[in-house]
Length: 453
Ligand code: AMP
Ligand code: ZN
Image (cartoon, rainbow, N blue to C red; front, side, top):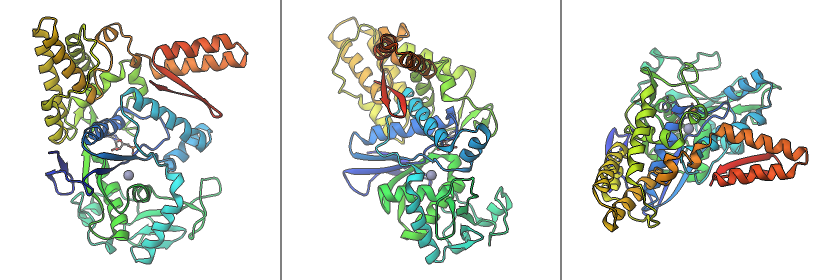
C-alpha cells in the first residue's frame, strides 16, 4: 500500500486514486529562459521516482509543463538580443538533455503555456463572470477576499501574507493580495488578443488551465518544490476551485524539500547556483541522480563539496558487487526496496537496502546464488534509474552518461561544419562515434538534437 505525505492535510495518507487503474499527476515544469540548475533537478528526479513506482500498479498520465511565456524570458531576450522563440526552443532542448542525463523519463504530456492561451482566457472569463476577478487598466486580477477558502494549502492567513509581503502593491489592485491573471503587453512584448486588450497571462493561471486541459477537473497528485506552495500553488487552487467548485482540482499535494548551498536556497537570484550542465562536466549523471536520491525528498538537501564524492564512492561499492554479472533477467525487484518507496518515497532507505544486497553478493562465491542476488540488486537499482551500466563499463568510465552535454554539442557542431563543407565522410564518422557511445542524433529542419539511447 502506497502512502504519501499530503501537504494539504499535513498527514501521511494511503494513496487511493480516483480511478482504480489510472493516476493523473501534474508537476510544475521549468520556466525556459536559461539552463536549469541543480535545485530545479530535484523535483523532476523525485517525481520521476514516484512515476516509476506508480507505473508498477497503474497507468500513469504524467503532465509536466513548459512555461514558455514569462517576464524572465522577456528580460533574457532583451539582455541577449535573441528572440523569445530562440531562447525558449533552445532552453527546452537543453532541459530535455539534462533530464535524460539524470535518468529522468520523459513525461506523458509536456504542454507549453503558449499553446494554451485560449484555455487560460476561457478560465479568466469564468472567474470574471462568477465575481472572483475584476478587470482594471488592461489587467485582470483575482480578488483574494472574494474567495474565503484562500490559504488552505499553505496555512497562510491573508493578513499575515500582507504583513510579510513581498507582494506587489499596484494602483490597479483592489486588495494587496490580489494577483494577476492577465496583464497588458506593449507592442514590443509578446502578447495575444483578449477581451481585455492585447496581453499575456500571469504565471499561476497557466498551470490551472494546463492541468484542467490534460487531467480534467479532478486529478490525483500535484507536485513541485516547497517554494511553490505559496503563492503559486495556493493561487492555482484558488483559480481552479473558484471555477470548478470546492473539492475539485488536485487531491494529493506533494512538495520536495529545498536544495541548499551553505544553508541558503540554491537559486538564480542569489547567484549560488550550479547548472546541471556544469555539474555533468564534473560527474556522470548517475552520480548526480544518486546524490539527489540519497536524501528523503521532503528533507532539505545541503549540497557540499563532499556530496558528489560520497555518491560516487557509494556507486563504486554497488558496482563492485556487480562484477562479472552479465544476467539479463531484471524482473525481480527487491520487496524491501519497493516497501521503502511505498512509504512516502523513502529513497534513502531503498538505497540502504541496495547496499545490503551488495554486501550479500560480495560474500558469495561466483555461482548461481551470487548471480541471483546480483540480478536483484541490478533490477532494484534500475527501477530507481541507477546502476544503468555494467560494472566493467562503469570502472572504465565508459558509460554513455560519461559524455557531457557540452562535448556532445561540440561534436554536433563539428559535424555541421563538416556537412556544410560537404565532408560527408567526416560528418558520418562523428555520428557513428556518438552512436557507439549511446548518443542518437536526430536531424530535422530546425537542426540537430540528440538523446541518449
Ligand atoms: P522554477 O523554474 O524556478 O519555477 O523552478 C522549477 C522547479 O524547481 C520548481 O518545482 C521549484 O520548486 C524547484 N526548485 C527551484 N529551486 C529549488 C531548490 N533550490 N531546491 C529544490 N527545488 C527547487
Ligand atoms: Zn504550476
